[in-house]
Image 1 (tube, rainbow, N blue to C red):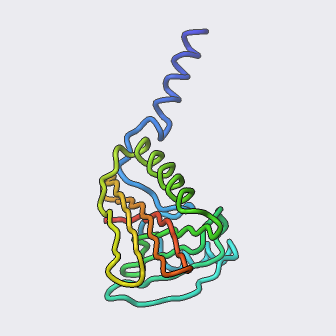
Image 2: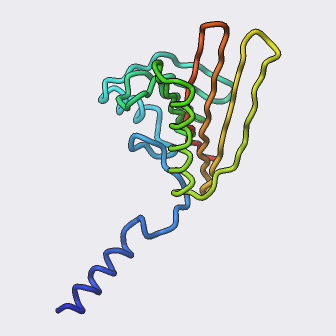
Length: 173
C-alpha cells in the first residue's frame, strides 16, 4: 500500500505542468497567444476594464486598457497582428514611491524572473542628461522558446516633475 501511494505521488508530480520545462511564456490574465480581438475584448468587458484607445500602427492594432485590477497597474497595452494577440505590456506606476522603492521593486521582480526563467540579459541601461529632462532607462530580457519577457524601469525628471514607471512586456515572436 505504501509503495502504491509513493508511486502515485511520483506519477502525479511528474504529470504536473511545473515538472515540465517551459517552452513558452503565456500572456497574463489567462489569455493565450493568438487569441482573437473579439475574445480579448469580451474578457476585458467582463472584467469591467475600459479600452481607452485603439490605434493602428503599421500592420498592428494597439489597445490601451485601463481598469484591470492589480496593485499599481496603471494601464495595459494589448498588441494584435492580423487580429491575433501577439503582445501584452503591463505598466505600473506608484505615485508615492521614492526612487529607492522603485529600485527595490525592480530588484524583486528581476530576481523572481531570474529564478523562474534563468538569468535575464541586460538590454538597456542609461541616463540621458542632454536636455532639461533627466531620463533613466534600465531593461532586462528573458527568452523562453518562441516568447520573450522584458522588464523595464523608466524615469523622467524635470525640475519638480517626476515620472516613473515599471513595465513588464510579454511578446510572442
